[in-house]
Amino acid sequence: MKNNYKILIAFLSVLLVSCNADDVESRPVIESVSTPELLAPETAKQYVLTEENGTNEVDRFVWSAAKYSDNVVVSYTLLIDKKDGDFENALTLATTSNTTQVAIIVKNLNQAAIELGAEPGVPTLFDVKIKSSVSGGVAMTSEKSITISINAYSGLIAYPFTDWYLIGSAVAGGWDNDATTVHQPLFRSGTDTNVYKFSGYFNAGEFKFISTLGSWLPQLGKGSDNTKIRIKTLTSESDPGTFIIATAGYYTFTMNTNTLEASLVAYDATAAASFTTVGIIGSSTANSWDASTAMTQSGFNTHVWSLGVTALNDGEAKFRANDAWDVSWGGSKAFSGGGTADNIPVTKSKYKIYFNDLDGSYLMIPNQE
Image (cartoon, rainbow, N blue to C red):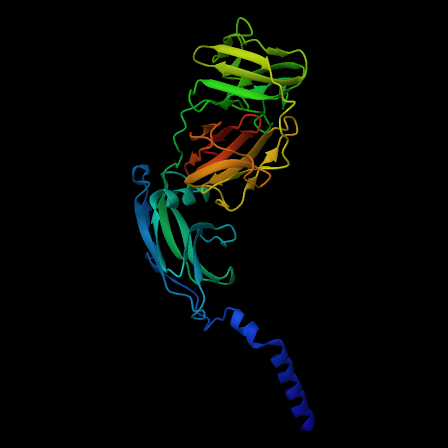
């Protein structure tokens, strides 16, 4: 019996040493195992979404409070996944702090449905859950989900512009027009949508332009001379000519698809700064204004940076170098522009993003898969 008492006393001593008062006070405590549970809307509710009502409230989601200690801030995340999904790849509809309800607007619910595979115009089932946490940990997820039906619209935002990609022996990607090959697009002016420009490195060789990756139509190239362009839109038409780079180096190509005028002039890049990193930052990005999302530097044109398909929210964005504000670039126009210190307006969508640190030009192409 004495030995049993000694073992018990030793065990209690270890507990007292390892669990001092400071540890207990600083650790979030669960009062009882009580997960948050959705109370509204009711399961099986059906939503027919329309683009015209995009900014309207579609519904208010309400849940019971999770049980933690009284002196902690509880964060809630409203999650949506395809019907019978495991929520490993669920999307976040909203987050709150110490609030057990949130209003969801039409376009946000629609975007989530589209990203999770809904076919526009076809009612599709989704599961919704609520997750709670304290200081990013001690997570609890509702034991039950509600199932809702969403009839979504396409969610594509208006983009009435044509993009032109460099193709040829003088540029990245060569003559391969395959859609998976990396081709550099021209940067469209933010003030005149007929004007396109690119400043960067060219190999000695030839180049022209295509508008649809994977297709030779429409095709754009040299017209009667180096100051003119010609656009081919029909198979029966002859191919336009190619622009020639006699000596490898930096050049600026500019064209106007309205006047059909073009220019190709040498660009002095000797004084151009080189950057270790360039990223996009702003309220529309995943890290908001807190941290940049790093872009990928081109191996062919080291002053050109890009991001593959990237989800952006309604908000603003800028570009900056080296994760600091010493050097940054902006613009006043959505989708394309540059050369100003303004915050770029952004509408929620998935984008392919291109940036040129030589002149601050940017191109953000929405409606990507």
